[in-house]
Length: 195
Image 1 (spheres, rainbow, N blue to C red):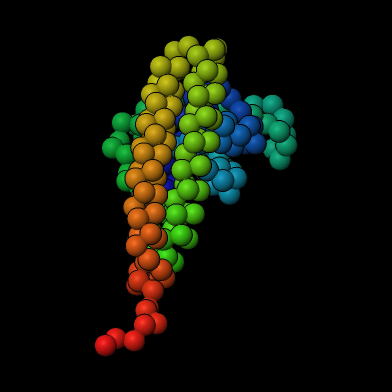
Image 2 (cartoon, rainbow, N blue to C red; image 1 turned 180 degrees about the horizontal axis):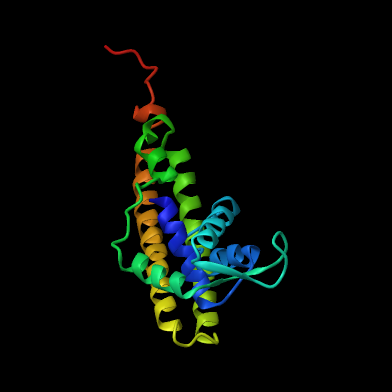
C-alpha cells in the first residue's frame, strides 16, 4: 500500500507543474512535509514505473540528467482514480508513546524530558505552519490554495493537541516524581528498620 500512496504523492505533485526528480522531492518535503514524506529511494523508482506505464513523460534534459517529468493525460486520469480511493491507514508508530508506555523503566524525570522534547517539536511545527499559511496565501496557485490551507489547518490542530497533551503529561510526571516514583515506578526503598 505504501507504493500506491507514493504514486499518489508523485502524480499529485506533478499535477501542479512538471518537475525534475530532485525538484519533486523538494516540493514534497517543503509543501507536504507536515503530513507526508518520501525519500529519493521511493521517488525515483516510482517515476521510472510511471514513465514505463505512460503516466508521466520526460521533457527536456537527458535521460540521466535534469529532465523534468510531466503528467500525461493517462497520468491525470490515473491520479483521479487514486485520489477517489479510500485512504489506507498506516499502522501507528510513535516512539515517544512507545517509551512512555514502558516509562516505569525510565522513571518520571527521563519521561518528562521525552515529553518536553515532543512539546518543543510541536511548537516549532506550529511556527513553521504559520509561515506556510502566509506563503500559501500569496501563491500563484490560487485554485489549489483553499485545499492546501485545509492540510495546514490539520497540522496546526495536531500540533496544538500535542502541546495540550504534553502540558498534561508533564504535570502528571511531576506528580509522580514528587511522590518519589523512581525507575520501575517504585518509591525509593526506605533504609529505616521496621519495628
